[in-house]
Length: 411
Image (tube, rainbow, N blue to C red; front, side):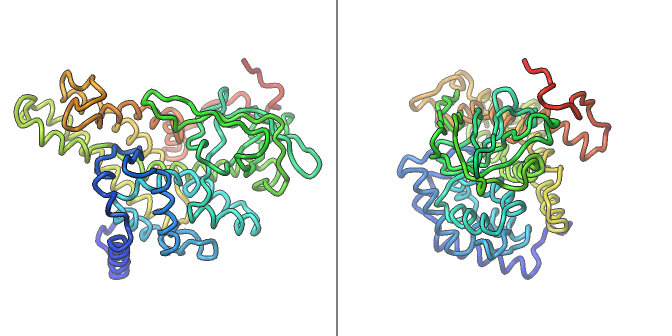
């Protein structure tokens, strides 16, 4: 593919660059540059407020959700123009973290499956950052086997009563709405008896409990539903079509997660240059080999993202190749964090206080890296998708494929 901007793309890049220079919160630039990737923990200002302010400013300026249709607040831009914007937004991109699930997963599903009334009601507040969304999919007994969920939605008048629980719901504590998959018919095979809903997190009977993570944060949450009633107008898609809606959401999730997931190489290379000219030795062939391997993968991910964006511009849909990016980026970021800690020597095991010049960059990166290999689909799920949909290998044997969900043994 041609990596040079066309005349139209170059003009778009200039407009984006000018707008960012005139409107971005430059007072936060230095702090954002020092924030470990995958985190938004500003100290000079409330992180959520800063994120909402930037999202609202982008929406008013016409730079939010560029690829969405204009009638729903987007700009109808091409995937290549969206990629150009992501490149130019640069250091300010982490301010969009609270909205990744909504704009990258829930919004695209609503665009495909929502009624005109649902799109008009739900999408504008999402784009302007007025409402944050979470994804209510995984359960304690159904993570990778997502179709095995046991949360029930039972008909009640002109609505539904929800009972069950979800886990690993990123950002649920700060969310006003969520995309909920529930079982509406347990007599059908597990993929056929599911229905998708949009639910307000302040609905009576919904209880959100933060999960304390190993890095001290509580980004993940448990969500419990106890006789939570919602109207049928909050159903997304036909009854029983929940799995099809889920696939739409998941394909966009992997596109969003894969494209946004960094390896940490940009943080590692300056650290090595700054600290390892002597002592650990830049001339050490083992170190050079490890750095070269990471650099190759980092560049491979960048160009794979370009190829994926080109494919989206031709087909309009994210493909299974995003699973490759997610798989490689997750494992590489963990390797980068471990190498960064190794190069710190004994200080690599220390946290708190001014233990080294780079603070706790690689320590926090390592503590977060395990979650990155789970969210959006585990490594094993990604390999299965690649084998099935990229390499066209024979699918795994599924003995529960056509069996009523009620007849499947559960332990």
